[in-house]
Image 1 (cartoon, rainbow, N blue to C red):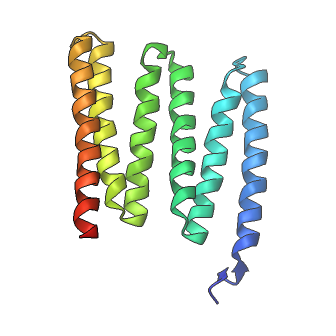
Image 2 (image 1 turned 90 degrees about the vertical axis):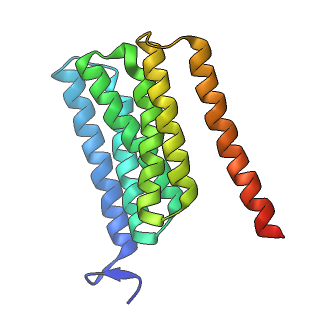
Image 3 (image 1 turned 30 degrees about the horizontal axis):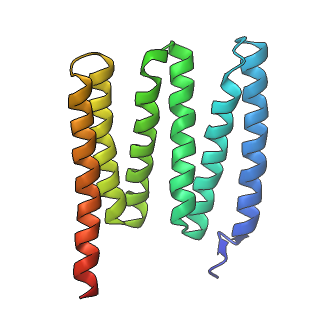
Length: 167
């Protein structure tokens, strides 16, 4: 049957995933507040476990939108926990851009959409340029030039490919 995995309904697996994500979020939030006295990790735990739940949903029902959104939330949760645990607050924005790049690459790996591969590569290049700007290796105008070049090449690539598809 298509609606079952190992004789278990997909909706049952999704419900178990939801309850497990909720319980893990609750447990980890309490642990971070009571044991580590870190009151800011609740959001990142929420992102991590909701993202994991959406990835399960994506795997069960082959939904690329759930895969992308779940990956974004998952990676924001992972990087947020790393940033807050290690005190890397200066590089926080670098990790969040990297989360979107990883999410696009994850979606490409599962659904083979070339759009997401190109988006992932462009976001990764922009992230490297942003990192270099943050540690003062390049000037602001160089970063803006890299950003403009990446965005224009991305837009032009899809404008040109859509023009030739219609004709």
